[in-house]
Image (cartoon, rainbow, N blue to C red; front, side):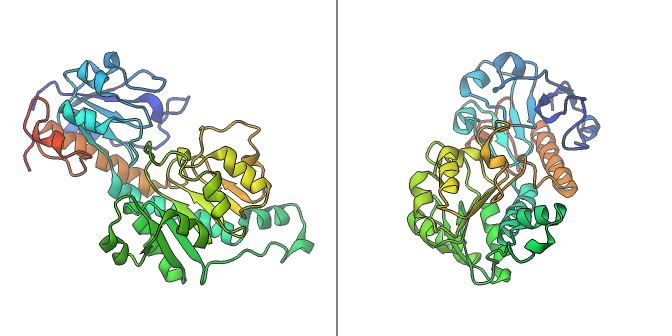
Length: 340
C-alpha cells in the first residue's frame, strides 16, 4: 500500500454549519488503516480533474457526477466509493475502462429504503396526512371521512426488482398483498423467489393499486412514469417513488393528480431537488412528500458509512471490495492488482 494513500471526502454531505447530515461517518477508521483523508471544497455538479488530482480515492457522500474524461485527467485516482446505492451521473463503464473502481453500499441501503417505501405506501393506504390534519385542526367531526383503501387484497406493482425491490416484495406479501413486478433484467427466478409475477410495464400500470418505483435512473428509465403511464393507472391507485426523481415526469404527475386520474402519491425523491417552494405537490392533501431522506435512520447511516469506508480500506490494501459496480475494473485496476 502506498504510505501516502490519500482520500478526499466530498462536501455535499455536510450542512451549512459544518456538521455531517449523516452523523458520525467513522472516518477515523481510515486513519487507523494508515490512510490520509481530508474534505474537498464544495463542488457544483461534478467531480473535476483538478479536484480529483491529489487523491487515490474519493468518498462521495452526495450525487456529484464523474466522467471518464475527468478520471483520465487524474491518473492518481484509483477508487470512487459511493455513500449509498445510487450512481446516476457516474460513468461506471468509462471509469472501469480507465482502471478506476466504483463501489456502492447496496446491502446497507436495501432494508431501510424498502421500509421507507412501505412507510409511504401505508401512509397513503390509511390517508395519514388527511387524518393528521383533521386531528390537528380539531375537526373531530370528520372522523371516518378519510377512509383509506387499506392493503389487504390489494396489488403492489414494483418497478425495478433489484435488491430494494425484492425487499419491498418480501415486506408487503405478509400483509396480504399481491405483487407484480417489471425489471429490465427479466429475472424470472428472482421474481419467483420473492413471490412476484413479472409483467409488462403496461399491465403493471393497469392492475396495480400501488405502484412503487425502486428502479435505477438511466437514460432508458428517465420519465418512465409519464402521462401515458399515469393515464393507464386506476383512478384509485397511488404512486410511490423512492428511486430517483427523474423516473417520473412531474408535470404529468401534477396534471394527473389535479384531474383525479390517480388517487395520490408518496414521494421521497423529486426532480428537481429541492422543489420550488410553490410546487403544488407540496400542499396537496393526497400527496406525501419527504426530502430524499426517509430511509436515513441511525442504523442506515451507520451501516452505509461502515460499508463505504471498508471498501476504501480494501482497495487501498490491495483487496477486492465487495460491491464493485463493474468487475472489469478489478482486473486492470490502476497501480495495483486487487486480489480476493
